[in-house]
Picture 1 (cartoon, rainbow, N blue to C red):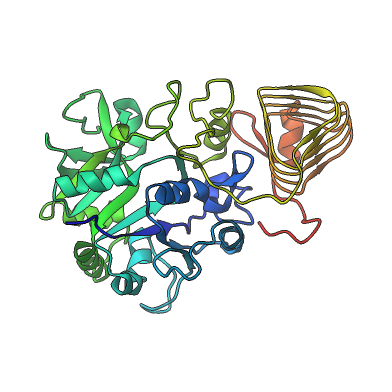
Picture 2 (cartoon, rainbow, N blue to C red):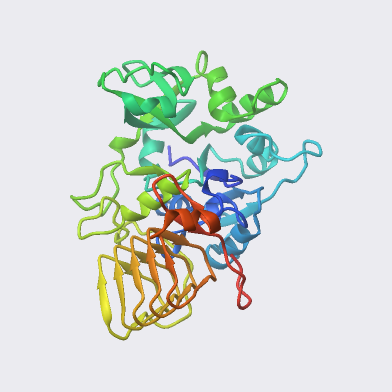
Length: 408
């Protein structure tokens, strides 16, 4: 028997309300990350690196930025009918309603699965920063003769109350689900750890179709983790795939094994950026065997005319004129003028920082201009009167006004 055909479905309709104001004008999967990427680029790269090149991206909330990004960065196939990345907004095929939950989003697009006729359907969210080789998850699914496989992240029991927890038997078969339990069930092989659902699933096609049709007839939250899977596991063969066992080609010895971050709020988003820095980052973007793919930039390399730069990343097309930049990540076409000081900062594309300005622990969205001599991140009471400030003092600027025709 040959390899099964796999259809990828990415759930990319998330509001990302806790990432406001970065999600004021875009959905969470479209939020920039790491100087040159969008959050959705990480799961798209994993699927393509794994050989899954037939992908539907289900969008809903403020989706134009994401649609423009996918059009510019992720054009596949053309005349190759089996290779595509296609954006699917709500089609109202099951009535005039928006997607009511993750399961309902797929239910409303069952026609896509019916027409493609895959053996397996890989359903992944677009909200997290990680790498996964789905080929290994498929192999696990086939070995266990599973109907459904749930990607599961081992987490310390003390942290497990924040997640949907998967209870398994000794053979990794799922025997229970609990949403943010006060007393999480530990893993059989490690009593100090629990399995957290990563919101990523492999379904046999017919099982998925039957489960979604059944869920649509009931009064539920129409969510995979809260309604579909709890209904399935008592009778169907549902297994948990240990994400820590996933081997990523090209991973460096110093990187964190099983790196996965739910960047659901400003603090987590900022910390995940800091994970990219240093000579031995816990998540190293430099991996030529398993690359994170992004939109090409038609501009020159970064130009540096003096200054002091340490432990930082600076995107293409940028210009630095005699500034001090420390522990920061700068996007494409960022302009930094003489005497500016930037520390622990994340600057998105096309930001301009005036001469002598001082920025510390800030996130500045696209197309903002920082005036000469302005100081941000040094007087939090003053910053709170003008900007969004996170619990640890991260100051966030919303997206500025586009200075030329540029989507995103």
